[in-house]
Image (tube, rainbow, N blue to C red; front, side, top):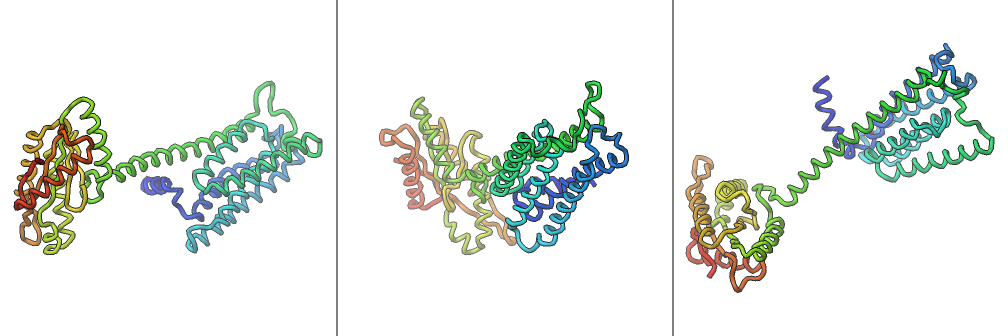
Length: 383
């Protein structure tokens, strides 16, 4: 049983991604539990009116027929959905039928006991919340429209004297100012249980969605292969840091690093090995820089570092340390140890010829090109 619920909860988290048939099964199955309580309730009152002394005896039998019809309808939806669930993922027709039938049944129950009672107003709101979580917007809105039209029509008809209000209730459910126990159980406890169920589902789904949103934000700014920031995130961060450096007159350095002869690694050992090399380089950089520095995969085999409050001398010390660590690293592959080196370019702010962060990055990139032209595996600072 514990394992069942452990497997169930992650599945509920993604209820919006379920097949339409599974959503319909969920809605009708949950409703069947409450319909079953109604059937038991009517059955008890039929056999002993003392269980519902405030109920209209002439309407108990028709109400029993209505709830039995509801049970049959929901069972039919469950059976139909179970038969069709493998045929197609999207079944808008079945979704519309499920929603319309649910609200039609809800209207008959509301009409029977009186529309303007707090339990059913609460259930109406909760049903809408559940619908918007599980189903697309259109069928829920159309079903709510049907329900609202029926409610308005029945209210007008009752006000004009054509139909009674709350035909299932014949007398005041209060006895000496206290509600009858069966009234509390049927019109108090059930709505509270339904509220707890729907609100619990809503809270769980919202929590998981927030967690998913957080992970999505991380994915948007993170390079999928190396786990460091991507170029887009790097540019955003550099603009913020550059503006801060200009405002407070603080130094700032950009380091561009490129793995030497990376194409040769891919051609000799395959792209899988090339990916591993990039991961190793990213780990070395992450281990060497400070927590508040920014590491990004700038493109292909090129990495970029943003070093806040760092002048050219400090940046060169850090860049050299990273280059040496990469040179000394070995990647085991098929019994052989792969060795790679890196070329590094540095540009530091403030400079008279730099007024934008893009200019500083361009200078670091030119310095990187000079390092490659000079024989690679070296660090060059922008002139």
